[in-house]
Image (cartoon, rainbow, N blue to C red; front, side, top):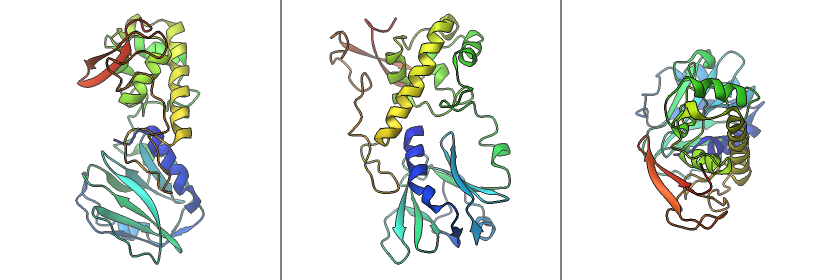
Amino acid sequence: MPELPEVETTVRAINKFEKQILKKVVVHNENLRWKVDKNLCQNSKNKLVIKISRRAKYILIHFDDSSLMIHLGMSGKLRIQGIQNNFFKKHDHVELIFNKEKIVFNDARRFGSIHFTKSFKNHKLIKDLGVEPLSREFNKDYLRKKCEVRNVSIKKLIMDQKVVVGIGNIYASESLFLSKINPKRLSNKITLKECDLLTKAIKKVLKYAIRKGGTTLKDFYSADGSEGYFNLNLKVYGRNEENCKNCKAKIKKTVIGQRASYYCGNCQI
């Protein structure tokens, strides 16, 4: 599943369409996770793109009075293609047509979605989301307040999208390793100092992944064609029974919240 760094990488690849006119939206398949609104094409026609941004894992294309929301789901991706290029791939569901180029939304598993909204902040899919992990609001004090009222594993808490958005399974494991916190530790036992280490680790890991272009899918490509995944040096995720890069102990695997979790029992307490 494309995670926050992959989505951020995609946003940066398509931000060149800011200040351009979205001439039209062509829907080839309306049956995505949620059926595409029949009025989306008409509502988006000939709109000036003011800004392109990200909220959680939603790609937001802003007009002066409304926005398009795109979620990549489990397997979705965007690509940029010349307007005269008739190349069509299986699972190309939606095209955003500009003057010289177009953005094509491809999603093999169709768990992605596209929505038109007058107020994205109040949209049902966004309004209850937690803070952005790279924001100033996500700090030791914020995390400690969330930790002290919950009795769940710290890994499960930082993956709760109502607490903080966009920390997927890989990034949670890597951040906890960097902050030397065992993923099975109960959140209400995490100290303020550890919250400081963890929030800083999360920011560091996400920024690193963004610089590298994302990690989650071996075939992940940003919209501009640049490849991710292979350039990222993972410390624990997917390294069960391999030597820890810090202490040489064996990396362990466990299941937390139905997700595989990797950690070093020696380094992470």
